[in-house]
Image (cartoon, rainbow, N blue to C red; front, side, top):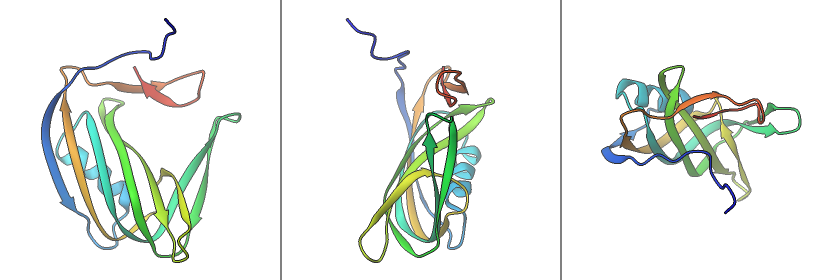
Amino acid sequence: MENLYVKKWEAKPGRVLAFRLAYGCDLLKALQAMVEENDIRFGWLHFLGGVQKARVAYYLQDRKEFVTLSLEEPMEILSGSGNISLRDGKPFVHAHVTFMDKEGKAWGGHLVEGTVVFAGEVFIQELLLPAPPERVYDEVTGLSLWV
């Protein structure tokens, strides 16, 4: 059989947390603070709401670098999701998001700092493992991936 994955983790469900985002906060910084303050070392998150402006990134695979897109207008968060794992021994949020502008056009990508919240809600599901995955640099992709 073809090798379809590198490693498997089997976790038990932990806490389920819900948060209301503060008006004017940076979305990624807020998500990162939530996982750090609650010592969530592995899990997933989902968020929705609205933003005053946004920044997302796209990874250029051939160049192994991110390019960012600034969206300087109010938009709805249609869907935001991500995972939580360890990077350099600390909780780390990796999130992607889809926005909708006033014309109904969708924009999205890898969430980066610079997205300013209008209103929002977040759910976090903690997953319990004795040794959560750690992100380390992967030579092949140029990304920090789970090991």
